[in-house]
Image 1 (cartoon, rainbow, N blue to C red):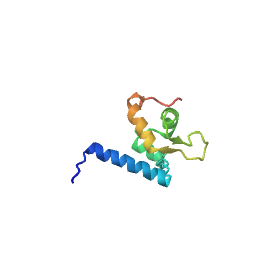
Image 2: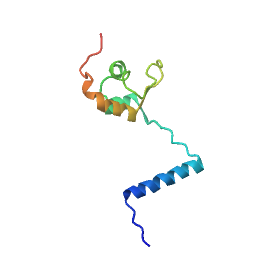
Image 3: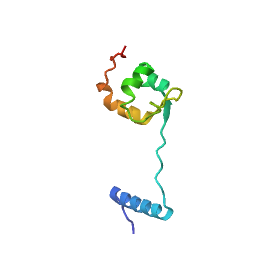
Length: 103
């Protein structure tokens, strides 16, 4: 006897196997590991080479995945590349890149 399986059958089997493995081994989903870069690196790759002061004032407060922005002098600003670039791709055309710093 020969059995033929279609894609739906394979998916049903896969889902059932995965469910049983999770139940038997009490698997926990992986934690999200951010890929952090420095402000200097971010500004050259994604920030249109704007000054760090400009980025801190106009762009970074709106962006998710920014750490240490208001931590004070001597604390580095770190940016989660995945979250920041995803946000930037959606909002880049709304950013006024020609806006000048206040005097």
